[in-house]
Length: 172
Image 1 (cartoon, rainbow, N blue to C red):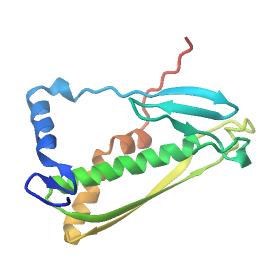
Image 2: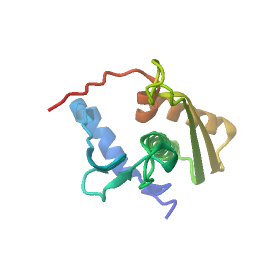
Image 3: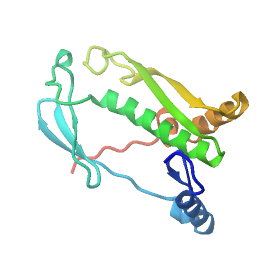
Image 4: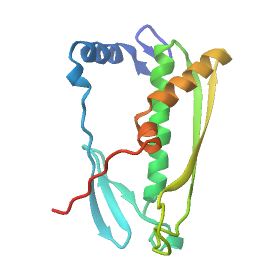
C-alpha cells in the first residue's frame, strides 16, 4: 500500500506523529542509544549482531587479504549512509505529503589505503563521499529541492560522517 489516510510511502504517519508528540512532551525521550556487537570469526571475517536480527557478515575482499564472506567495513559505512538517507527521504517526503514512487541512492567513496596498510602516516578514512539520489515523484522541483535540503541537514549518519565526533576505544 502506497497511499491511504494513515500511510504514505508505506510510512505509518500516526506512529511518527505519536513519537514526535512524545518527544515534544518529554524531550528526554529523544535521547536514544544504539548498539552493535561484533564477533571476530577468523582472518578478516567477523559478524555484527544487532538486536534480534541474523548476524551480518563482514570481511575484506580477496584482493585485500580477506576471504570475501561479506562486505567490508567501508562498504557497510557507505550502505549505512545510503540507508539513513533513504529513511530520511521517506520520512520527510511523507511529512510533506510527497509520494515517492521509486528511489535509488548511489553512494561512492574514495579511500587511500596507504595509512591503513601502515605505509605512511596520515588520514586513514575516506577522502570524500558522494551521493546521488534519484527520486521518482510528482512533486515539483521546488518541493524536491526542499526535500533534498531537509534530508541533507537532518541525517544522523550524514552528520556523523561529515562532522568530527568523540570516539573512545577502550580495552576490557
